[in-house]
Image 1 (cartoon, each protein chain N blue to C red):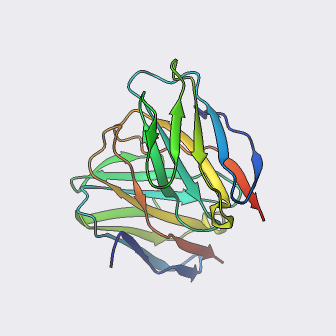
Image 2 (cartoon, helix red, strand yellow):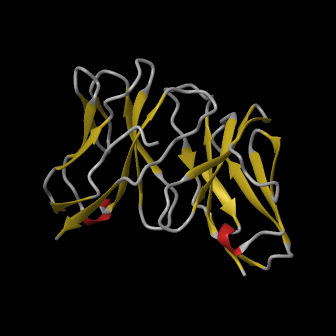
Length: 110
Length: 114
């Protein structure tokens, strides 16, 4: 069973910030929140991950609520090349790999 | 070469053939993974290797046989596959298995079984 819930699809205008929500209400204390994206028929690309604090890197920002039950991935200035399926994953480590759900299909509109 | 490479990128095989998929990581990682992505289905973890030892076999049929000769290379040997095994096979690597460790994926091998 998926540990996360994401909207099936979202649209965003080019140049605007894309905010992708994720619910993970059953997250455990030792589980990290990961975001990956997959452009059609390519390998998934790591974006960002976090445990409790908000995180930012050159690609995106990750905002995690204080109770850790939800998070938002922010792409600050979306471009057409950001059109992809975005996966929110929770993982606690060990030999369990990554459990991918259906993700959010983000479509950037020109 | 950088990152994770996979060869071949595309493979068409008959049900009686034997073929192998190859993955090589150039990141100095010590854990490697095989995932399967069928059409319209989420990625499924198949195998996990850590320090060249298999640590996870996710109920994969025996017609798929992994091999990890060293920390940089991972193979998936295929024999007597079925048409429903047609999928995108993805390799990934990471430094360790801890929760804070992200995985780096290769481009995948698109497999078609006739």
